[in-house]
Amino acid sequence: MRPDYLRRTQGRVAQVQQALATAPADGEPALLSDARLVLHDIAGTAAVMGLPEIGTAARGAEDRVVALAQSAEPLREAELDPLRQEIAALMEALTTALGDP
Image 1 (cartoon, rainbow, N blue to C red):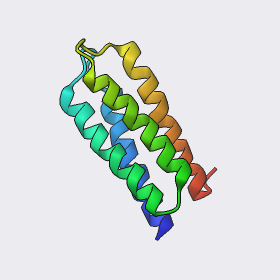
Image 2: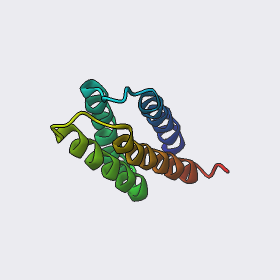
Image 3: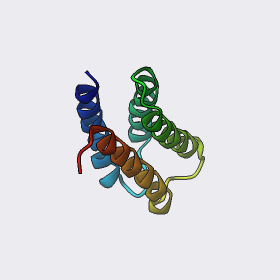
């Protein structure tokens, strides 16, 4: 069950990565909202599955999304880069948990 969860979660994170890779420079509120929901779900289910490192990585990325969403200013590329890095770290944690090289 755990490998299936990890693979499904990798797919979900890959979708968020793709959306962030093509995000417009001025940001898109729906993108941040969708990313927050996915990351929140991953953080919660990772805890239930006994994967605290994945939960922690997802929660950190979720917190960054919330902070970006609360900003009154339009998003800039420089603000999205740290989020992209956190999402990449989450993907790396998933890959490590699966035992893939």
